[in-house]
Length: 171
Image (cartoon, rainbow, N blue to C red):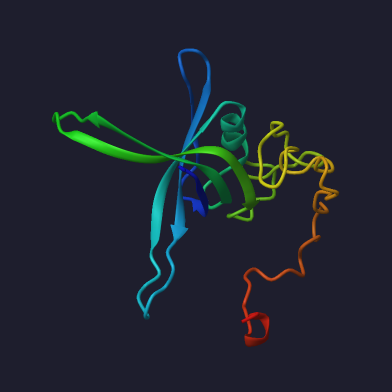
């Protein structure tokens, strides 16, 4: 099984290009925090992500440096010869789904990384986690779940992080 789920923040703006057959491909990197161990610095891994098709165009349009995303995909390795003739090995995550979790830069003026349309951004039919209706846009078929409420201030009372207390742990 080759399956990867990552949550991280973009380290730079995505780069969109097209293949000769006009298929969109978007590349970006995310920083994924490592767990802390015995007082060591937390550190992070920087992982290259590749997204194809309509989802690639959507990522290029709505993502920007600092934006937090969840990525579901697979690991793909490859190699190429650099200018000196040495073989360079690569490891990338090819994304099947990308979910936009938060804006990383507080940008709310309609610029890149901030969707200002009514409702959810126009994602494809099978993208996003938790169903086949994308990132919202109606009830998920057969589950009885509805999308989260939208609009400014809806989640203002939510904490930025979860802090577990002794009473919260079930064992």
